[in-house]
Length: 111
Length: 113
Image 1 (cartoon, rainbow over the protein chains, first blue to last red):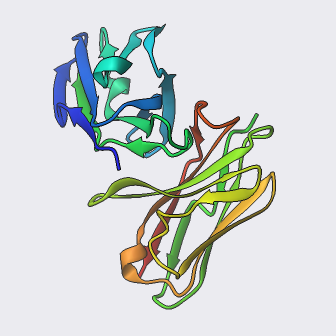
Image 2: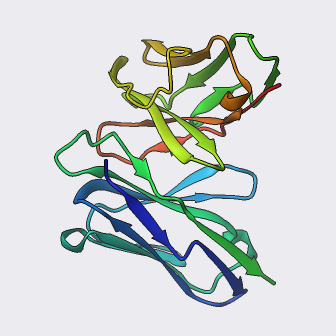
């Protein structure tokens, strides 16, 4: 199966700082998504972004499908951004439902 | 919409007992997924359904696990008999169709003692 690598594994930021999280795939994927798991364990869907760039408030994401990676940008970070960020994808040409998750980036935003 | 609803939120059971986890997907979504999250293995896809039909159950760890979706608004994941290594958070998620955004329930935290 595909391998999904996320970097960095963990990150500590001061409130107001910007950050970039990366997701690499071992094979071409479709159905690429980013999720935030908050400290209470809830998984929130951030972006569905198989290609291109999307923005939602302070968050934006870019996927370069031909190069098998995606980036999540967090600007002006807030303490509420803390938690684990996961990317997930389904292998291109396979079942688009079969999302494989990365190991996540643990983000801690300090006041 | 209330989102994906899972019950119970927490379950503590003794080894050997049967455990049933329940999920109500978002209305209008025709794909449903069961995931398991542990510290060691992260988020693993156990099984998914399209239009109430199981499509891929290759992630189900062993025969003690079974999942059903009798209709478009309800699914169960059953473990019988349960073992301590089954302790994890079990998530249910749904999407409108294959290749669309997946939305997760709040999870069921299962502890088998």
